[in-house]
Length: 444
Image (cartoon, rainbow, N blue to C red; front, side, top):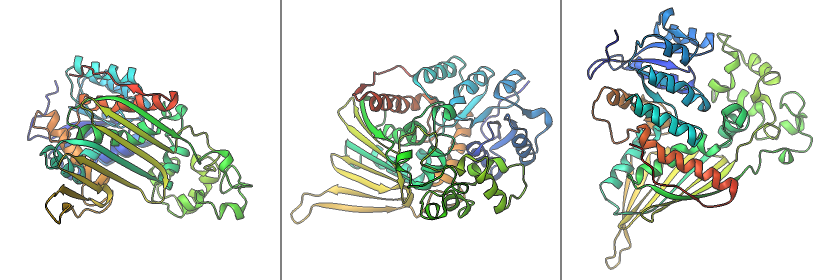
């Protein structure tokens, strides 16, 4: 009979869906074997299973072709790290909850409101802990901003503005050419849900339990469509696009992927996993033939917007807005919080923010404190991506499951409900051109 681990012992976990995000979280076990141990994997790809088996020295008996197959055998771990595709999150998680596993679940945890409530009920009925991977809550930048807000440094919040500038190469690889481009591939066609539920969650977190009451939204796909393609452009960059057109295109597959072969390697070269060390020639060949990433960015089957604005009104009268700006030259997230005594404004990617306090004294206007956390970029330091948030999240999950005191950043499934509701209603608002109410709900 399996006995759950307790504080001070390693948490045993099974990887479900051996993709980029799952492996990023599982990496915590390599540096912290006293806190986390990977004891199994469930993935339909036999090559991926073999890679993870070798990486974590797993037995053949701990390899499974699906989450459903894992759920049919006696439980042999405390938890699963579920990094399956968005549309698979609920279907794979419910049988595992019933089998007794706690879950670290990639965001978004559901792709529609009906599925969201199904998973919330399953977690409640089976008395299992589900933590959602809103990793931005763990980035030192946002943690420090949250501490200042929670301490009342700027008084009561009046309004919040957030912006995510999604770089031209990121939007192209993920949301125009890639896995999240349309309903058939991702189970939904919401750019806001796939990319910005982090940012909407950040707004909810800063509001400390004050629930949203209404939302409106506007957005469109302005540039990634056939009529915006350069004159004479082909359908595959390296096959039928004239050299004089391809050489000038900002989104040429050659420029985006061959000239930067490591930037999005986990996605772009996924169909070359069978090769131990694929060459540049191998990569060029797949872009010319079977790779979705070799297609003209203006002639794909994408359904996502490339920019969207969301406005939220909270029950206490506070307002918030989020802008997703796709195709930006520089990837960047910003936040601006105005309070009754002052304001906080900063750039997450620079790990630097400014606290300005109202100062009505003669000759003064405001005082200013610069907070520089001296962390550069999304992949800086030993704690990995999202400004160092990825690995801190996993450490907190271990504590959460074992009954320890969760951190300020901990996001249970209940904590994540209103952020998801706001996204679902924002997309409905954009589609139907109306204001959508968000009713208060029982999420305990």
